[in-house]
Length: 385
Image 1 (cartoon, rainbow, N blue to C red):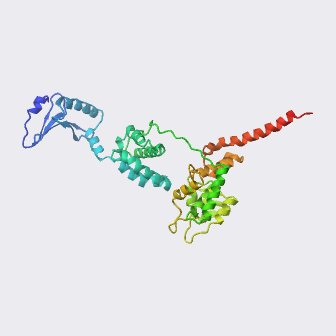
Image 2 (image 1 turned 90 degrees about the vertical axis):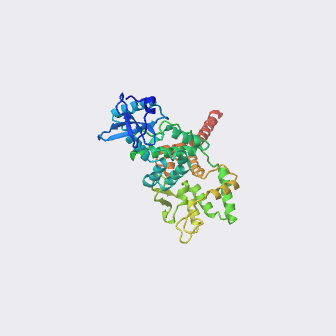
């Protein structure tokens, strides 16, 4: 018979469940349980000729007409090779983003990223990504989720962009592992926050002020000696913080530091006399391989922020970041007329475009040279016979 509200309302429960199939739409029917509960469903054969059923909804919650419309859509999908019952089973067993993140951090990140990057990934996932979409199924994560991640962290745009980039990598890897269809990364076409590269360089006067402050604190005999040594080496070498923090005595050979690993791989750091003098003034700590020794025996100083905040406050340089010391090394090199390839080699850049951010700093010495030449020519032009 054709299923309608009147027909379905008149179906009485038996001692066991039974089905009533619609006469107008093969595969569409209703199941009546002994409890009296009635549910609309479709029945079909999958590609393996197995009989499959997919519940549409409970009578009373779903009308007979709505159930019929839904059944027509599902049966049309099946005729094109779809399998809604199997899709439901797969979705119920699909991994959540939180489960993906565990696999991502254990199987993917350690094999493809440096330990510092793995730590940054873990922090972004734990603090920013999982709280927004950790319980969502991986295959159901959409652009809406990606946009929401950025929006919920709009008060910290730089961190939001970093977390967004981590999510994008995770979604790409989910495709590799077969957890999402190819080419479905939800981060595509979602616009990140605009970032303004900060360029802060120490002037000669500020550099003198910082040097005086370091000497003053050192003379007072504070607990910041390791931090002072680290800051001086950062200024004199242009190295990244992590490269000096984890520097071991065995890496120093002659007038060079041979780092077995860095952000850009193995790296040689050339040491000037001033840097060698700083190293010579550091007394190695017994049973500690690190130049910048920490408070715990055998470790390096892993937290420079507390002493740095104190030192820069004493020097009146509250807006100065530790990484600005590296920028200052580059700015002095440019002002002295060193070429960008040479500066890139000193800083350990693998791409000249990374070094080119300092190119505009060469304008000042060029302007000064133009002024000197112009003045000299002017003297000749105005010289009286």
